[in-house]
Image (cartoon, rainbow, N blue to C red):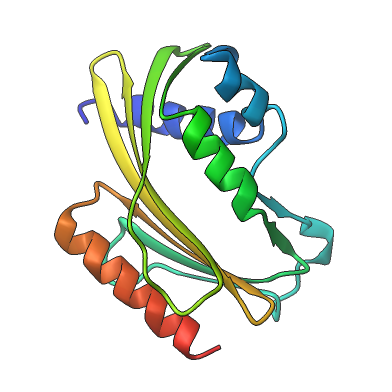
Length: 169
């Protein structure tokens, strides 16, 4: 990425997109309908205490791990799957220009009943980026591992890290 500010602006825009704000003309319409329902993980920030939430950035700045008590983060796997199906290829208009996105569910085998992983590739003008997210819920806890600039090797490591955290719950 050549312009760091452009990347920061794009990240902010995706934060707005995930909550259905700041985006206009989301296509296809099925994607717009799902996005308007809100994010698949909803945080109740009024309930957050030091015992409810942990976040780590292990060794690599491109990796984050979040561990959140379920009463603070309500993870809706059905909504996540619905968004993946409706928004496989989508676009939206923002104050930063047209943003093109592709999302694809990725295989994930972890010790949890509810789990999902997906890769998202984003293009805005000449700026391209990719992310990988794996989220699981077990024993009243939501665990998410996020990668920027994912590769097959880093995805394997992220899934291993997610499994390790889930095994300890």
